[in-house]
Length: 609
Image (tube, rainbow, N blue to C red):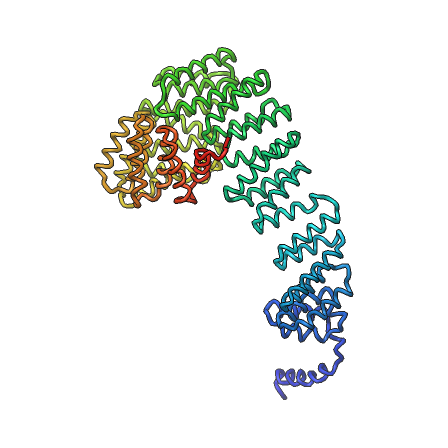
């Protein structure tokens, strides 16, 4: 008896001639198509053509077979056969205009570009509205942007609507970096439909990268707002653009106009002024809050504007060096006047806290500051947020007084009562700094590791910076002696003991020559020299960073601060302009580039309002 395997093999061999003699019509198109597609994916075009050329012409031109067959014929450079099958498919499926695009593709592949252009022009001439999207998509798939554009424009003509297919055209122009057409399409679209503003802003954000593009858009929008003052969309877009460029003074003009048009009681101006303050453009912030406080004094934002106005002035006073104590006292008087007029209520509790900050950190009257903060904490119906902020400031005061245990107790209270909130994260960050000041870097890192995942970006960034400072400076100096000395200086800075801090930094540089903290030490020293009004000293210290290749990590920070000192303190506009240009050209990836560019343009007189 033969083994079963041999019997099976013999039976299969006997069956082959019978299968070979069966008529071709028994070939299953569906399974054959699947097999051919598999061959096509593997680039085995000869096998694809071998399978499909056995089919009747009608089946070859079928929509399931045609695209795969045509592609393989072209891959094998059998252009005449490809042309023939494409024409057959177009005749059998006149409703599918993409076949006409494919036929033009055959001519193009064969090197017959005039014939291809003629064919594609014929497709466009015969388009119906329903055929526009698939034809445009097919041109796009074939990477023919000019013909994609023509298809959409043909569709626009058929629709007799100037904004038909505007989103698709904007995306196309963005991809091809056709900036003039991006601007033209976006402005036309937003003028017709204000609901498209979010889409338009997003597309412009993606499309505009160079300064000349922003300049072009700004000029168009300024003209449009003047010619069409009733078109709010132009003002909205101009406001958005000026905020992107950090031109808050110019944006304020648009915010006022939009407020008047929408009768929103100053809401738009308040929003813009708040953004300006966050970006430290205090002049624009003060102008905005002052406008609302004056024009809408009895409106829903009147009192809030008066409070925010004083807060903006306070921030400006704090960051104008050296700090003018006369201006601080004038600000205190204005806070007191506001409290007299509005009363000491839960709504004005934040004013009391701001006043306490001035007494504590600027006038060195800690007793008065502590009294004001306790008044906020004991006040009935004050929000938990304001109470928490007052406790954080109280903890700061204890740290000023050299009582770290009282400070950490209050920070921890706020951490627990405001868990997973910005204020809770802020309290945890201050606890981390407290451990850092004390030289307990391990405990500080345990706090910072949590904060690096905080949802508040600013706090997460601060935590990351402090964490990196600790890590970078305890690798070689495993005992962290240099970092402990540096942390002690930072605590002096927090306590507003600036002269002692500068002396400490000089001592650190002398005691730890060549330490990895040298660039941080110089940078902090320059900041403190600026605060005391020693601008020449600050410039000389910063130049020790900018001229030393070893200090590459803080080079852009130092160069930008150097430019600001020249602009804001020394008033040397020419030198400041030169330095801002260096920031832009030498450090294109720096976080300071956008601000440096704005300041450079302003100093150059480019019409920034």
